[in-house]
Length: 101
Image (cartoon, rainbow, N blue to C red; front, side):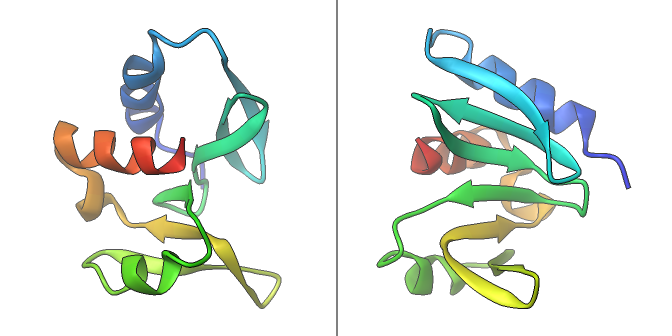
């Protein structure tokens, strides 16, 4: 499954004013790097991967349309997966991107 090109473009728009952003194709999706670290990624498996503080993850996965990030059968505490319903609006996507920064 290819990543969502429209979501990628929406994220580009949100990050356009920053000079410290670059994109990298990785993990079957498109990763947005800010200050040299992964901020978020439009996943090829669907949804958005967002970097979060590990202490915040339990609270965030309790929100609608948010799941813990699992890779190779292991829960990754510094990321969450947000399903498309969770970032449908501009304000919602902006909030998730800002969390990732």
